[in-house]
Every structure is written in C-alpha cells, then in structure tokens.
Length: 359
Image 1: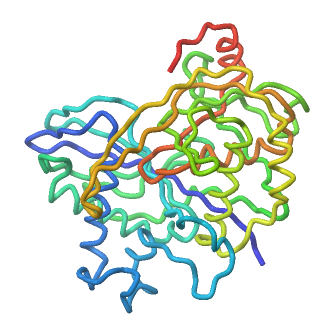
Image 2: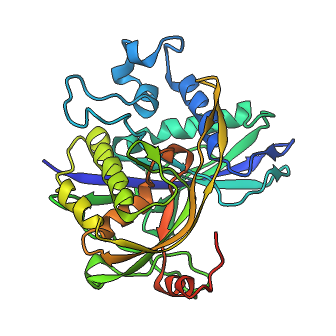
C-alpha cells in the first residue's frame, strides 16, 4: 500500500470592492467563518439537517471538509478528541484593518490529502463569499486570482484561477512525501536570486543528515500556538510537548485524509524528545477571542507566540518539524494558528546573543 503524505499550497488574492474592506488585525477567524458558511451554501443539499445524521454525508463535500468523522467501525485513533480538518488558512501577517477599494488582501490555503481534489469547491466558495460580503459589515470583494505555490519553494508558482476568464486550470505543485517507517527529509526552501540573510524568511538550507547530532535549533511561533499537555494549554512549550502534538496531528491527518496509519515508534520518539532542553524562551501568551455563529458563543483561543531555542539530538526530529511547518501544529490550525518556522542559523545566533528583537 502506498503511504504518500500530500500537501498543496495556494495563494488567494482578494480585491476590495467599491466600499473597501474592514477586517480585524488577525484575519484567520473571519476568513474561516465566512468561508465555512459559503462552502455549505454551494455544496450542501440538506442545509437544515445535522451532518452527523444526514443520509448524504458520505458523499457530501461539506461534511468531509468540515465535519470529518471516523469511518464506521474504526478503531484507530478512537481516543482523539476530534478529527482535524484537511485544510489550513494562513492569514496575511499584516495587522492592517482598513482596505480601500481596489486594494488587495493575500492569504494562503493549505490542502492536505484527499482535500486537494476538492479545490474547485474552495474556489467557488471564496468567490461566493466575495459576492455576499465578509466581516461584520459584510463588505464585498472580488476573488482576483489563485496561484498554486510549491510548498518548499515559494519562488515556483503557477496560475490556477484568474477573475478575468474565470477558468480553473489543472496545476499540480503539491508536495508528495513517501512515508514508510519514518518521515523522510523534506527540502528546505530554496533561496531566491539576490538573497541576503536579512531579506529571506527561509529556513537554513540543510537536511537531516547535515545537522550535527547535538546542536541548538530555534523555532519562531508566528501565530498563536495552542498546545495541550495533561489537559491544559501550555504557556511554555517544552520540546516533548511540541513533538507529542505534532505526532497526534500528523497521525490523524495521515489516517483520516490519506487512508493509512503512521507507523512510528511514538513512545521512543517522545522519550528522546524529553531529553531535548529548552535553553532560550522569548515567547508570550496572546489572548484572542472569536465569536462562533454555529455555537452562538464567544470562544477564548489564546496561544503562544515568539521565539524559543532547544538544545539536544535532533537527528530524528527535523523531518517532523519540517512537515509541521507546512501543516501547522496544535489546536485551531484551520484559523492559521500554530504556524511556526525553523530559524536560520544566522537568525538563531543573533537571537542567542540578544540581537534579535522579541516577537
């Protein structure tokens, strides 16, 4: 049986309508909330029925993308709190809230496994959302275009959709990772022409085999990261907590959205991860509250942001960390939470020396 873990990345460009756009500083929740409603409108034929009891759920795009359920009689991962959705919305890093007519907003859409085949539904849903309006003021936008982006080389991209002709092109720049009894090395992003360390946001360009047995690596949690350990959300992310969370997420994504089990020695990996020490911690907890129209209540979704440095033997963990960079880690990934990057060596050195500003 083929064990291929597939990730596809797309960049969507929204163009503000005649009344502009009003969006919150962190746009992940707004994008996810409006998009979910639009997706249901264009794909669900039984809108008043609950997904769990709907007779059409087995063939319904909305039920699969938003209400993924374990297969009947499934024993694998039966103790997981919920099945992760097979997509991630990465909102723009900017905190800008007001966009004038004609200004654009760009964000990334990550699709995982079988969800890649549902891309046309995502396109129609975001186009529909633009026609009905987004945000509290329901201001309209135009879906100007979508590009497929190579997940490990953002310099490689191709047009999937353009508002001018409204054609959906068959472009495949997805990353296919063949997994047997371990996750293989994933290439680090290629450095663009004219690259200088201060300009690039890419990771240091090394593979697992080029990492010393014992060394320091740094991670930057770019969006609020919510990791649970012993039933509580942690404010200090020890390395073993990060690895536990990554293993849970990757295992579930493999099983429910690719159809196979990730056969790693979880116990041994966690034991080895516990030997890795945190030597620098420049993170902080950021509170964030969102309103859920489906649950009709406010939800507290704070998380950790900032930089941290770990020291130890990373020979088995770099592939896990690289894959986590693509699919995020922890709770709330669909909102863009849990996004992190591995710091380049020059940034890590500056951080340890106290030359890099806090997040």
